[in-house]
Figure 1 (spheres, rainbow, N blue to C red):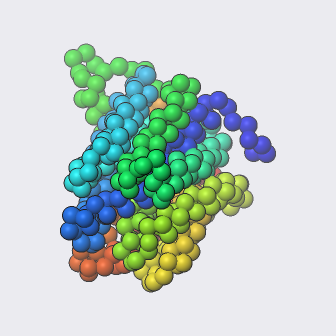
Figure 2 (figure 1 turned 135 degrees about the vertical axis):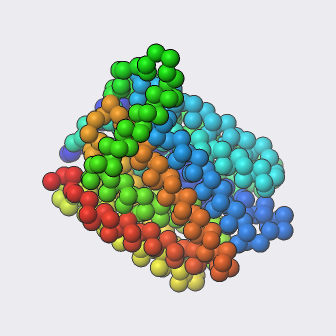
Figure 3 (figure 1 turned 90 degrees about the horizontal axis):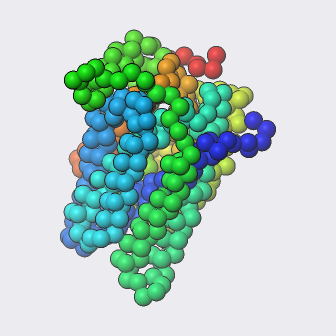
Length: 416
């Protein structure tokens, strides 16, 4: 691809990454820091608040994982994909606003739980829309482009929020500045979701309706079971999903727990936020460069390389002692984070044998990813609680990357 010649549908779809990535950044930075500070004020130990946050995220991903395949099968029916997408988006936006309306530590945990469910739910259908907006040949680039502009898009409301938090203008208190930052992110998310809602249409869909007297849920459940049997019989898809189950777990755990871990090892709030802002900026060109490298080295080789880098990141996190080392860690994460997510999404999209079932297949894609996230954050919570140190929790994540690496080696190369 010699120039950036996106169609209206491709650009509108990509802009949702631009819109929603602001919430992802808030979820991994400002919200856990805010929760930790609220927990400190309530007399809770640092390890306790880290464990609470890990458990909350595990519950959110568990609930989405349970719902994902059947919701996907229901959305494969004519015209349903947009409906489900908008429903989860409304849920996410509503409870993100609710985060700004309470000063209770435990209510913040509950509201962040529901907002996370809404966010994860939108991604099931957003990811599945990739088969509707582009071709298999362009899928690696379009997926990578979405992640790339997402990193830049997330920085703008994030910087606005950081300025409010650090300078507390307009007579804002420290808590009021955090709440204002949350509302800015909600507004950003809403506005830049409009192009997808307006311009993207469900191209691939099942045209058969449920049998007379049979509910949409029941017929979708039956369809989910039949697709699951197909996945188990397909060696390529089955191996990919099992590998993805492990390595994306490690990726999501690092995203969700990075700020909590940084605070546990003594990194200041400003250093944490600035380091993670730098991660977003570096990730933008890194994703696009790796998307170009796919043409030479194949997406499989690049995914395997990214997994190896992540193993090194967990080991480095275990021995990290100083703030500057957190910055080094952030650079390595920036180089591989968006790349492994983008190429995994497009790799799976190209594996789907029947695009009319894209939502259902991406429902299973999400269930493997989300169930893995449950074990990742739970694993970190367990090791942190048992040892009293989150360093061992971070190190335990390496086991997931190692399992994912050896399984992915056995996945046939989709580009051969």
